[in-house]
Amino acid sequence: DQQVKQNSPSLSVQEGRISILNCDYTNSMFDYFLWYKKYPAEGPTFLISISSIKDKNEDGRFTVFLNKSAKHLSLHIVPSQPGDSAVYFCAASASRFGNEKLTFGTGTRLTIIP
Amino acid sequence: EAQVTQNPRYLITVTGKKLTVTCSQNMNHEYMSWYRQDPGLGLRQIYYSMNVEVTDKGDVPEGYKVSRKEKRNFPLILESPSPNQTSLYFCASTHRGASSYEQYFGPGTRLTVT
Image (cartoon, rainbow over all chains, first blue to last red; front, side, top):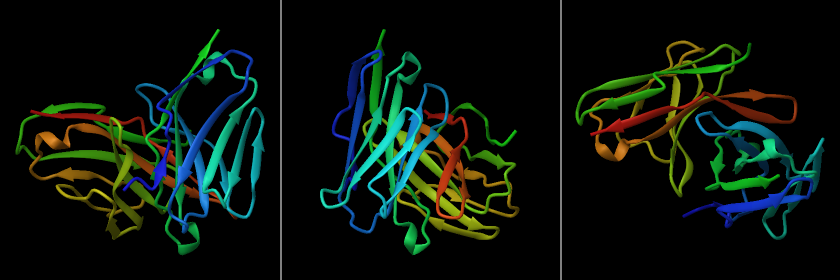
């Protein structure tokens, strides 16, 4: 049972345009969400996170939106740059229960076209 | 430099030959965990440790053992590897801030069991 879903395995976006990556979750206990970026032959690196008490968090070109009623979050990258080409993983946890375990989605491969 | 290190990075072995993948972090984090990444399945947690001598099963613990004798090290042990344990393995440690946390991942260990 996939509790965190990334339904788009891949996405191609023109350089300079907006990239929108989507993630859905089913477990209502999840209250903390993170996005990770992964290059080949490297471990995932943390990008941005959001707590369920917020509906938006921004960090430079990256913004994460959380819609709790729809159990949906999205990552916006504006403007997209060639270095953003990577696999992006959405992850969730039920942190209020003291459990920092992350449940990951299957990832979306983002390709930025120069 | 703050980091999580894993060794070896690549390993080819045969069924039944015991092996250990080491993991070490220099950030004094209490929480560490092991994940495996498989195509179409994202990252799945194998085991985690909330502190020294405190370990527990994640989502896919069968066939694995761990130990946490000191805070910085969290080795993953495969007593009798089988081909279905061929995978990409990541160790991670967690930084907990006042109202947030994030996991730092090692570079990965690609294991092939023949």
